View 1 (cartoon, one colour):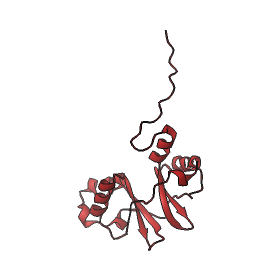
View 2: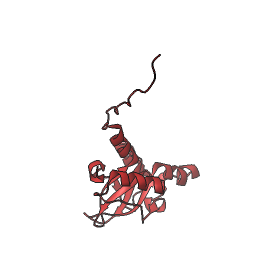
View 3: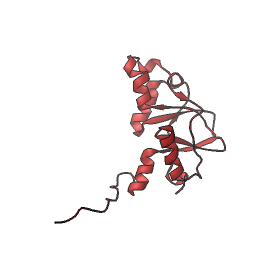
View 4: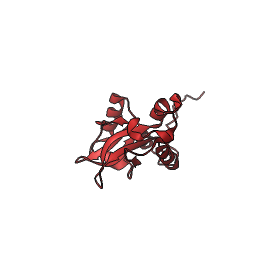
Length: 144
């Protein structure tokens, strides 16, 4: 299976001047654990990523008001680990394990075209879509 078959688009993205508070509101509204930071017009260039865990470490744990912080101050800056849409989902999983990350921006010809997450890969393996139960494993218990 190819990355393009599982990736999410449109992705949740904000500009570098967005406040952390605004980004958090978007993440909550869309039920996402991250937001990509982009620059550019139609062909967006990824310049960073912000995750909920990063926000807790860099903002909330330090008692900083998220209304007073802009995204570029707390984002993990580019270059990010990315993947192409025609790569295999197996390669995506290998890259996530190798780099200890859970999200891969999908980039084609330098432009952001989507994102694939560890959750997307698990959904594929489990056989279930959003809101569906994954296919249960076969029962290998012995009777008797």
